[in-house]
Image 1 (spheres, rainbow, N blue to C red):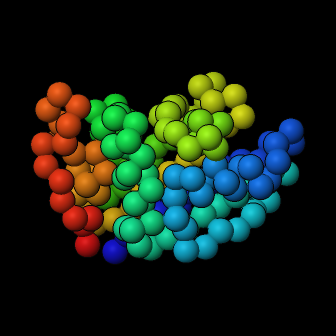
Image 2: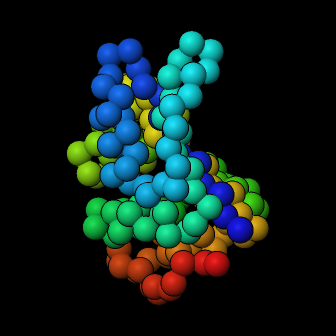
Image 3: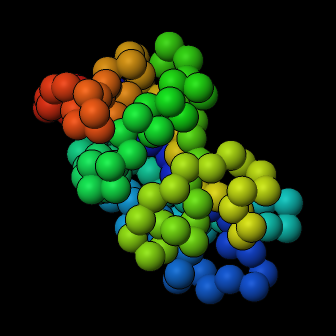
Length: 143
């Protein structure tokens, strides 16, 4: 069983639809809602299907950033969870750039939280070990 939550704050100067599009450019949710928390507005997208990460999987290969992605994912992972952040503005234009939660994305990042029984399998599927930038192996998504 996998649970994926992707969220981004909608800043006062931002267009809500553009923030939503930034998320949809990198993720295929089963549901998407708008939530208010502490006077701030967030777009929250959720899925319980590994296939919802297929866009991210493809973009990581197109952008040729498997090694950087793997490093960032492993840095912020536990046995059953990984949290990582993508630059919202970069995602809006259909590309990927990993960032830290603060200061690296002026309008705030897109936050990914993936929880499952063996997060290592998910990381290996999304960003497998490479040799000269090419995946050493490709496999089907974990079940």
